[in-house]
Image (cartoon, rainbow, N blue to C red; front, side, top):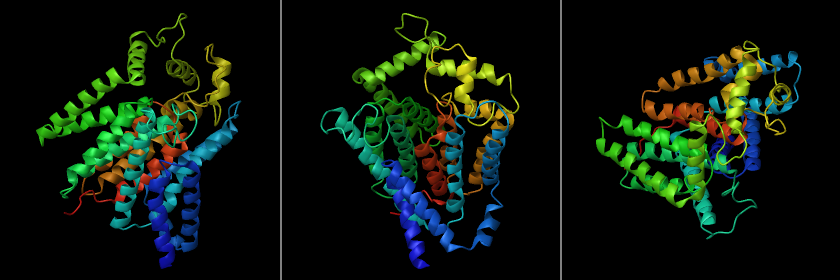
Length: 393
């Protein structure tokens, strides 16, 4: 049994490497970890603990509701897509019932941060033509994974590094600040608005938090944000285009910039048209996997030929297919997880950053249905539930 114990700890640590690098390797590790969990047995004890986790019952309730929503509605074309991705949340079960020691958490965190550091360095090297692209279409894949997932992982790695810096008692804690500088160099020289937005918003929140406690931290954070954003805006064509385009969309009621026609931004179209349809069936929605076909059939959008499976907003997506009942079940997951994290006595702020980070992300895309980001959240939630952020000298 000790062999199984050591092996599952190693697999958990390796997830910190696999998530930023490879979907295939991550899937492999998930399968092996689950098999070990099943072989270990002791299910009565595990189930007894699971019964106390209200957020887990909300997850199970959401999954069951998706199966129930197969029974109504006219279109279920994307049902398999939805069921496959929502079922990934069940990986919470083996992780939640597995005890890890602090050294395993520490190694997992360090592995995750170093792998993302490597990813950031590779991406920056490719951006400045120092390194050859690892895969074709480097603009969409700056290092190992798609740009919008890459930037999100780097953004969270920056927040995690800063948390460790503020709590560390080590004389080498400044290294975490070097990590943040390298992460931000990649984040702001590439596409990926979600990563850029979360980086700015959550570091501003940190600056506000430290106003009374450590004013030097607040001033340093705000100064760094001003420098990195101004420098990126003036030196990165991609970042400048993103900022200018977003500003134009907001000021012009969703209309795209530099368009001869009155064509509107696709996210704006999805939001407005989805809300119109939601109001027609607000309680139970249109059924599992119904968004694509229902949206295309009932709107006059110029984007009807696009094969988008979601409205680029997780809350709207669930509201559309499951109605307000499904949306409330979905929100209850995070309500109970936040309550659960608040029960941990130490470093409550640091622990709460994770669920709020994920909730904020889901305003911009259906990240609950994106493998890399969902497994990242499951992995990090496991760490944030039991990890102690302070380090000895």
